[in-house]
Image (cartoon, rainbow, N blue to C red; front, side):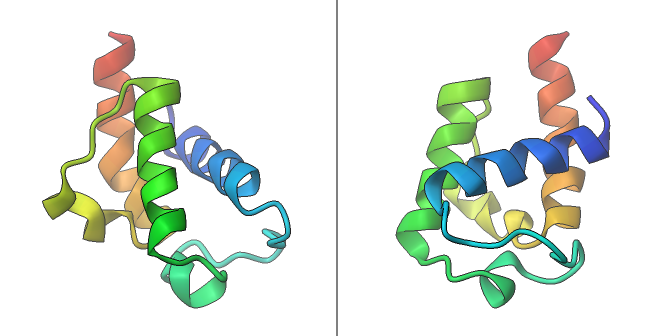
Length: 85
């Protein structure tokens, strides 16, 4: 999986848990919580959906690495590739 595909997975999850949020014009290098009305429960839902849909575990100490779309891609792409290998 490429980094762009990984970003799309995260965007798809966000659109499922926060359907009223507009994802148009989202800056990939800015914290998601600074751009969207996501609270801590929404963030946990993202982590839970990554595990449920894709088998990816994100330990709590790694949560800061999921701050922006770019950092999500950096952190998750190797995990997606390890799961699918």
